[in-house]
Image (cartoon, one colour):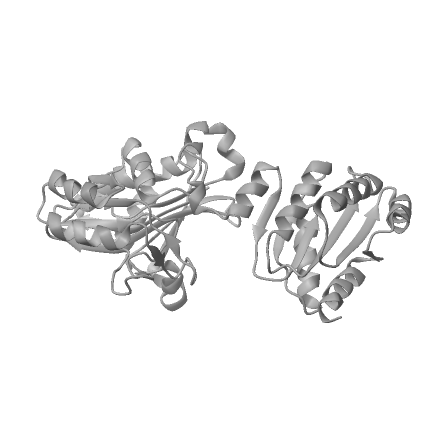
Length: 395
């Protein structure tokens, strides 16, 4: 689950991490008032969407308007806000469709001496979280990794014990910190790492992390994401979820207990099991097709869930065919077919449907399909299913 920058900064501030003062605004009047409240000579007006690259992004309606802008008066703040609120911001991460900006965050200006990069992710190879830092703050970390990987410094840390003092010193030396900055880092870096572990984050990125003129470390931007599977331990975090920033079909699937990810292809997939779903998409691509989605109904899907899965798949106007790939283990094949046929009647199919079944009670299930009289193409194995569903598009 992702959250907005202003929400992430509030959580970090609650954890003792230094962040700039800021005001959340929903109107141009509030933005102008926020500038006055902050009381400095400069402020920054920031679009709040779940995407990076906002500073380099541009609004569809106002191509000269960036998503993050420095302002020097309340009037200037208001003028920029009027061009930003309710408009569509396109960044490198949103794609051409962009995202509508409904909230702005007005933040105090700082005397910045240096910009750094800080990020924490879970590294499977290291078996735990890894703190990454770089002297190249303000740049996309992927660009730094591609062009100057030697400028990225990594320190794996234990989620229970946190970042050790010697690790802080290692990073400080590599980044060229002076004594005052090292003292700041000795508190700042372990706090951020503790925040990451305590809240079951899947990613925390501070880009840039700035060093101010008085040697303070301050979070200038924050992107925080939480592990969905751990949110049951952090119920208050659920209140920070902004459904308007998420794919509507994915939200709908989550409410039905389905794992769904929207893709760009035209062959809908309904599969039980995440690994099998990935293999199904691979086989579709191998035989010349493009999957329209990842959809895992799980091992205990009922009629209502299968029906909702079909409705979600067919709500995508790009879908021109559907492949159902079921391996009956805990969930028997005949039970799946019963649910499939019931939902088939409820949904009403207008595109070809290919079904591949294997596992417990598969013979009975295939007989049920054959006797149903429905316009359903049966496949003997996964390769056969992939070939047949791709073939329906050229038929």
